[in-house]
Length: 417
Ligand SMILES: [Ca+2]
Ligand SMILES: [Ca+2]
Ligand SMILES: [Ca+2]
Image (cartoon, rainbow, N blue to C red):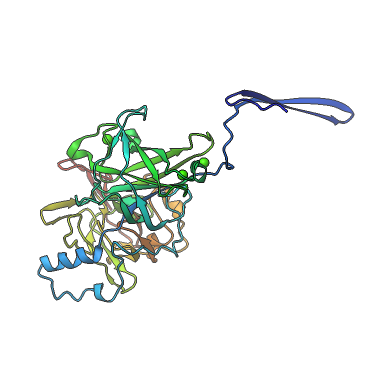
């Protein structure tokens, strides 16, 4: 028996003959051309890619923040709840929704061996240099190589290190050797692009870890293939992995940086400014503890569209927007302050898909969080909150021509009755 050589082109055309009402017919399919690929020692396995971050020590930062703000006797729920520290894994076991942080949609967390990696200095991916020491979003160096507690998350802080985990068992081609694979990372529509090398977690795991440092594009601009990914708040990134031996094995995962959420009028789709939003800790039923990016105490509740200055850093919410920058991972609920004009949560019979179909949709709506039910958050979240017009005879609404506005940018407000 003869073996077909690697990279041989094979053309395949299917024919079918059949009788219909005593007539004979013959039909021919498209011709499909494919190339043979090298035999691997193992059957091909599909890859899984997951984006993860190193958990911050939320409870320690909160204690420091409270002490700094003269709140040492703070009767915070901190003592009565278990907040995961850097050494404990997050519990996402009851998560109900899929995460874009993983190509499988499933959450992943635990302790992972991470080696110092390499990154490509050009698009060919063949010129690699050692990656600099990664830092967390507060600029603290992360000791690498080491075993880190990592949790999948589709939300990151600008400046965070994004850890990439790949499971592709057929890339463990040599059970005695720690092997490497390559991952491509792009930010928002290709504004920046990086290629990083991932290292097998041990000689025969078929699991690979690596990382890319994110940096603030407003501070350093964007340069492709310089070993750091330039991003800004409310922007996205995508990581993709192509099995070099299997053209069909291509997987992707995506994440967002410092997203804003919005209060949305469920009848018109307009963003609603000046609404009080409270994040409730579901385990205590009290307003949750929130930290600013720098580790200060962040206000809760907040007002949509307002600005807050914490330790010299100003958070300016866009029109109708709000955010809670840093949370302990856990269960939360969103409450909306009372209003003469709006009702929240919206009627159970109102479909989120109908709201998404409004002119400025689709929104980031969720059957749990957007309806005032308990949802799970990691370090931060993006969740739009629909409110309904109350059935008043005269309803005064303020609408804007823009969903977001830069500093100093004019926003046209229209009042209608
Ligand atoms: Ca594979
Ligand atoms: Ca190996
Ligand atoms: Ca870059």
